[in-house]
Length: 307
Ligand SMILES: Nc1ncnc2c1ncn2[C@@H]1O[C@H](COP(=O)(O)OP(=O)(O)OP(=O)(O)O)[C@@H](O)[C@H]1O
Image (cartoon, protein in one colour):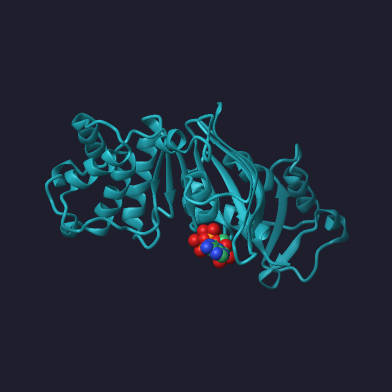
């Protein structure tokens, strides 16, 4: 996949002297869903604002579809749809009018067929004549997306698309975003919800204190950093473990009722087969067992933990 956005050696120092971004390098692949995760104040909005040409970088370069966002602002910006965190639309306009107006802002000729398609894709078609004020919160958010898509951008930025949205609506929004990806739009979303990144993203970037601390395919990230935990529920309680099991670094929990073994899913040998046979030899029996995979949340918390 080729890059649709290329961010090179980007830094941002605000007038106050605060360094919000420090030498950020990032390539977004055409057609992917990229989730940018980071704690409050990490620099997510600053980064998006620079890519969208709303803020200027102090150093570095951003290319959008091969166009420099500073020297070729209009061309680069026309490739981008931006859905900001806050919902701000004219409450008394109709859905149709507000979405059509947004297209006009990009100097594009009217295209009612496109607006109709966008509204239909976002399940807003039957609301096209409604005033914004009469819509639910979830519908208003979809109107914001429709506005951002009105000028047929190739890239869509969603800044915290589901902040403060209930679980049902969040899932609905995920479906909408997947549908957009299928229609060929590249999507970059920022989120505080790790579950959202885990659910949606093809790749995940983690930003902390203005630095990208990780960029990885979601699947390989889960595999690479994810450990698995095997928990054995013992038939009888153990006071201590026999020495023959020392090298497994097992942990005895619940007053000796469960035995916990952490292993690397990446390793060729997990050691499970030999562990089970060594347990048998040591005459340690169990009633049940389960395995759990460490989540992206564990990985995230590990990476952004302040030392
Ligand atoms: N105009 C500004 N002047 C000075 N500092 C700023 C300005 N805008 C943002 N900052 C600071 O830069 C840092 C990054 O802010 P930014 O809004 O990019 O973070 P964020 O990751 O989007 O946070 P959140 O998740 O809370 O939205 C913060 O410490 C913020 O206080």
